Structure formats: structure tokens, C-alpha cells
Image 1 (cartoon, rainbow, N blue to C red):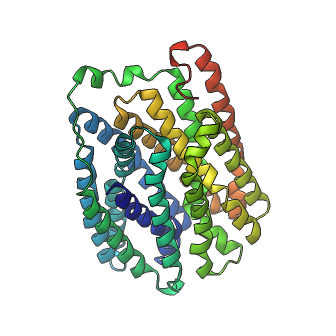
Image 2 (cartoon, helix red, strand yellow):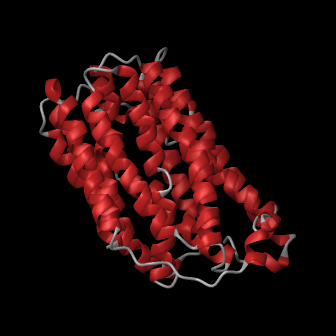
Length: 383
């Protein structure tokens, strides 16, 4: 049931990420408004995952939180469908509440997945790869819908994926742990300097995905790519992501977690630089292959680092704080800036603004090793 929940949740994202921006443009939203809407989604993701992670660790209800959140998604997806063409403010409100429903799901689902496989990064990746498959299937299927009639099918597809996610969430394993309030109360005091420096690097890296999440489809339009190629081109990245997830155990058998994170950050640096300097179709297609490293390898290595760092205690809180900071510092700033800059610059030029940020992420990650040398009791925890 964990793999099925991943599949349909990310199938919903396979609609949202490539197609929400053009759908909103069809509904006469401006690019700045769309950037703000995406940023608002991320603001919600700043608040709820961290709260729900603490709730999960205190009351051990990760599976119940996922079920409740999925049901909210279903209700709000229906609201989006009903208000899309008639009530613009109602649509925005439903989209924001839909974002509130989906915000806690992934970090808590990741927590359940890691616990179910005994913190084995290879086994976790094999569960998580179902999400990538769901994304690819949804993106490719929706690409066959004519551009002039995508609004209604988009919201119908979103409703279907939400219903399926909710359905399979009721089959998730029930999380049962003994209460230990003393450990729970020490969470914030355990977050030391090495954690925050490492997390800053992760946030800077994720910030550079802001333009990609905001409007990669718009880059394809500016490159003159026909609409029916949108799903397949997105799916090149997802295919690379799937391959990397399947090879996760091979990567971890040969390199340390910190080395894998560095590989992921360098892959993204090459990707954004190439897209910014050479915005042509073949470069777009080739650089999509790097998505597997910049996202999948990054995500698997980061989740593994968190699991090692927390030692199996309060993992939902750590995982949710990680998601909160990526959504807040990464998506809010990254997508908000992307929408604003795109009003004045071509999309490839927008990407170039984020190249120094990606470089900063690499430099900050290099700093973690220096901090670790000053904290011998944490040696190896984030490497």
C-alpha cells in the first residue's frame, strides 16, 4: 500500500507540476499571480509538515494523519473542479486548501517507508520509485489532451488521483510506538550547528528547482516545442529519476552519503547552466537526464543522512523539518523569484540567475565536513 500511495500521489504531481501553470494561464491568471500561487503553496508546506511531524512523533499517528490529509485533498480537488470556470477566488481558495491537504503526506509517507524497510536506502528507493512511475504515467497521458481543452481534464485528473491516494492510504501500516515524552521534548535542543549548515545547503539546492517547478513547460513553449511533446520531455527526467532510484543500492555501496549529495549538486549546476546558455530542444532533452541525479540521488542521499543523524528517534520530526525548510526556503523564494523574473526575462535567463545559488549550495556542503571535525561525536553522521 505504501508503493500504491506513492504512485497516485505523485501521479497527481505529474499533473500539477507540468500543467498547472499553463492551465492557470488559460484561466487568465498573470505570470506574477501564478508565481505567487505557487509560492503560497510552499508557504503552506512550510507550516504543516513540521507541525504534523511533531504530532506524529508525540502521538504516533503518521498513518492517521496521511489518511486525514488525503481526504482533505479529495474534498478540495472536487471544489477545484466545481469552481474552475465560475468562481476565480473560490478556485484559489480550493487550491490553497488542496495544498494544505497534500503538504504533510510525503514526509510522513517517507517516514513510514524508511521504518518499514529498516532504514535500508536501497529498499526505500524501490518503494519511492513508484512515485516516479506515477508521475511519468500521468504526465504522458495528459500530454495527449489538446491544449485548448486542458482545464476541465486537469481538474478531473487531479480529483481521480486524490481519490486513489485516499483509498490506498487506508491500507498503510499502522504506526505503533511506546510513548517517550522525554525524548520528544528534546527535539529542538538536539539540532546543532552541523545540522543547520547541512540543511542550508539542501535548501539552496532545492531553491534552484524553483524555476523548474514554476514553469519548465513554459521553457518548452519558448523553445517552440509542440504541446504533445510536453509529457514525453518531462518523462525523460522522470525516467532518469527511476533509473537512479533503482540503482540507489549500487551508489551507496560505492560512495559515502556526502559524496552522493555532492554529485547531485554538481549535476544540477551543470543542468541549470546548460539550459540557461543553450535553450534549444536537444539541450533540454539531454539535461533532463541529469534530473535523476539532481533530484533522485539527492533525495535518497538526504533521507539516508537524516535517518543516520536522528538514529531512528523522532524521524518524522526530522523528515518534516527537512520538507518544511525545502518548501519554505527553497520553493517559496525560488518559485516566487522565478515568477517575478519571468515577467522581465526569457525563461532561460531566469535559470541563469539561479546558477550562483546552486554554486553556493555546493560551497556550503563543503563546509559541513569542517564543522564535523569539531564535533567528533557526530563523525560520519552526515557524510
